[in-house]
Structures are given as C-alpha cells and as structure tokens.
Length: 198
Image (cartoon, rainbow, N blue to C red; front, top):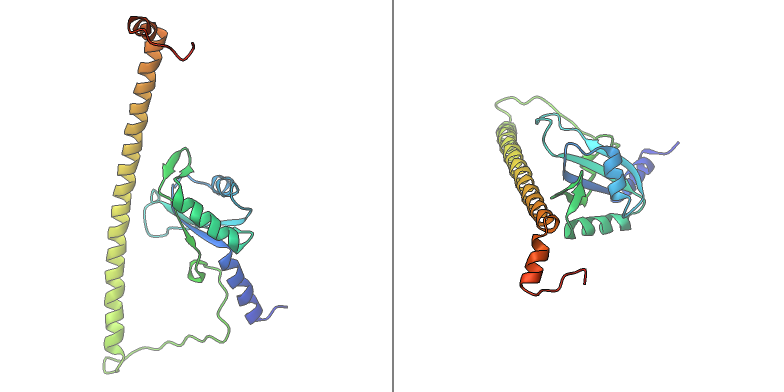
C-alpha cells in the first residue's frame, strides 16, 4: 500500500497533466468536451466542477486530465490563440494549468496538521478573525456581482451571435435569389462581366 507521501506525489503529477477550462457553455457535456480536446491530445478523464451557489445557466468549469504535461501547455497555447468552437458557436473559453486546490478529492498534504479553536473577545487574534470574517463577506458580495456581470456578458454574446447569424442568413438568401431569378446573369451581360462559370 502506498504511503501518504507517495499518494500526494502521484496526485501532484496528475495536477501537472490537467487543464482547467472556464467559461464553458452549460450545454457542453463530457462527450462534447472530450471529442473537442482529443483533436489535440489524449484525454484520460473529464470532471466538471459543480456550481452549488449560482444559477444553472452560468458558464461551467471542468478539469480535463491529459496524457502528458507537455500536451497541457500545447492545449493552453492553442486555445489562447484561436476561438474555441463548442456546440456550434465560438465562445471565449479560457484554459489554464490546473492547481491542486481545484480538486475536491485531493489527498491531505503529508505531515500537515490543521488546528482550530474558539476565540475569546479578549484574545489577541480576535480582531484578526473578525477582519477575516468581514473579508469573507466582502468576497461573497464581489463574487455575486461578478456572476451577475458574467451572465449579462453571456446574454450580450448570445444576442450578438444571433444577430450575426441572422445577418449572414439574409445575405446568403439575397445572393441565392439574385442567382436563381437570373438577375446576376442580366447584370453580367449588361456590364460585360466575366462570371465564375466561364
């Protein structure tokens, strides 16, 4: 049986082989994400990080374990340079190297002991604990604001993509009607132009 130090070393090696994906569409499933990433590297496992606090339509995050740490760097570079297509639409998906704190099943650090105690108001550390409590509440408020802002950006992105798609559809429909009703042929003859079919 492996010792605690060996288990933690094995876990740290797994972390170096894992990519953290952020801003994934809520419609993205494990199979979709796996097939998208397997264009670049062999995927060993995919684990979505559940969102317990925000609404279900928020973008999702996932940890994707690859076959080597070298592939992690390649995938991160690739996603940083090109738009990432997910479920038919380009999304500003972000990819970063994973960190140990992102894993809920991480083993305990060997030789690490956590001690806790109740603080009396007269204790020297009481003011520090009070400040930490205040900072935690402030962080929660900032987090909620960031979530709401992210939802607004997602709605704007979806609207922009919808408008672009509709605009392109109208252009292609217009071009198709110009060709099918003979207008393009008449214009070509009128202005003595050469067509692509000549």
